[in-house]
Image (cartoon, rainbow, N blue to C red; front, side):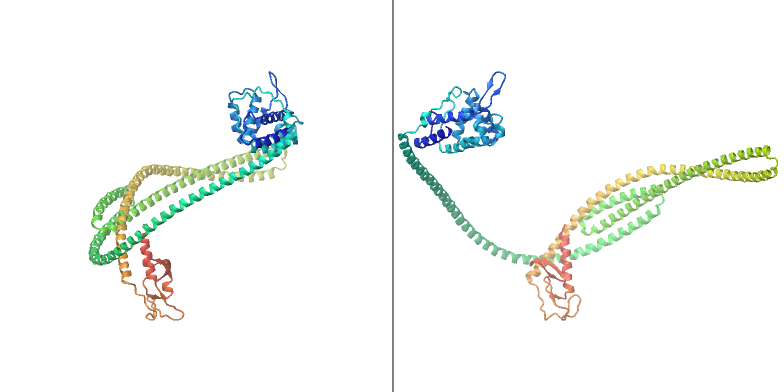
Length: 590
């Protein structure tokens, strides 16, 4: 019946030729048949009030298996007129048919038989192969366009009865079937022509869009060409103007070179005068260092001298700050004075390290004395043990004498001899004891002396602690002074950088002047000897041109490569040009 209802619905819909509504009889019979197919073999679920047997349970699983079915399930739950699960299931089937995805949804459900086993018996239609066949036939319903009103219908109380009269065949039915086939063929041709028309309209619209874009790009290119022509004319005018300015710059550079020569001579004279004053300041600083070397014995006096040196350095730094704007060459004197201060700080740090080393040596001496005292106490304990052993031996000897006198009177002579020997041993032991006691007294005296020395060392260390604190304070002041000096050095370095930049600009102007005048490229015939080492050229000593100065050198004197303004790639350069260019590059680098 399911197969007949699906085929009949497809044939009647094709013959009908427009969208189907909910009053169309074959469509109503199709929903009744699908409801019976889904109810076949459905398990009965028990609840507190009654037995429940509905197809809404398995249809809810589709929402989990096929994410696109969430919209249908949500819209079915939101419908106001539906109260029973059967009504929700009927609404779900109608919405799925309108979406043309009923076959896809039920295929996902039929594949998962492990989940369907919770709702259906093992002999149910949906659990067997016939269910898969029915789902496959549902794919043909995607041809049908249906517009069903679900809100107005009473889906909860409808009675589903199958009308078999619709599926009985007659002669009229055969004729109507042939007509339907002809109509379906005509409809297929019509749909094909409409699709071709749509494709052609799309291609025409795309071609129109391309033509519009090409016209726009053509107009843009024409405008850009006109702009480019105007730019070329402007560039030609600017080139002519730049050439005229270049000639003016050459004249100005020649004048600047003459002025710079005069300024350089004046700077040399000022440098000589400043050098004399710097020598005098250096001699004064050297004399101060000699005075400080005499005051190295006392740490306090050295600290006072350093404080005085700090004030002198501050005064000197103020004077130097005033002279910076007047004389640029006093940079060397400031750096020398800063190095002297650093040397003094290093000497003070070395002295502090020496005092720390002396403290460490004294602490080591104290540890050694403590070790000696421990050894002496151990030796005293050993001597006391020996005395106890000797006394025990004496007591045992006396007991043995008494026993021998009582028991063996006949052996008295031999015993007397043994007693005499033992008495000698006792006398020797007594002398040993006296010697050890004297040695013990001397060791105790030494221990007392060492304790006194350790106490004096502790007092000295306590005296050194405040000196350390004062030295730390002086170090902090020294750090502050170093920071000030560092800031002033940076300011001086900036001034020196500006000077070097001005000198480099002068050299660059000179080189530009040389390049404008034209380099002299020496011919091979004119050079017979290397310009640097003055060795004669031969077959083994070949000639090589320097690409910077144009002179001829041997391979040893021109074995260098550097990039030049005339060529970005590294080319051969002589040793003198190599040194000059590297010096210039290093001075340019900040």
